[in-house]
Image (cartoon, rainbow, N blue to C red):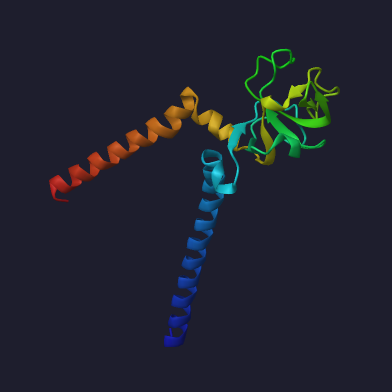
Length: 185
């Protein structure tokens, strides 16, 4: 093999290794960034993030997606916006902590702004109006599938798969390294 061929092979292997490291970094970022946004929504200028539990907003937002919510002034909310709110006591979804639905009408009642909402997948609008005081904010964007991972991580099997098993594997690896070091191999 000539010196020139040897040099070309080394350059090619360096380029391949560099490309693989860059690709690995990009993939890692693509995996980590959504979880950072969910954990700290302030990094994108939002106030909160929530896992969507139903498909009432399909096809726009599915169960298992995460919505990132900005706490905007309620007078800035318009028809067509998607909002997250705490349902009032007379709402058909009053047993749910938070609901994310689209605003289909804005009204004024008793000096307070109210919103008529509807899930995109629902045939009819929600019966009860949502007072402005119950609105957490407007949905800025959603992240598909991330909520499923978060829900899994909070379950018993998820804790075992994501915390216990890696912890045990780390402990076994460390014990093996100590054994190898002590035996002089």
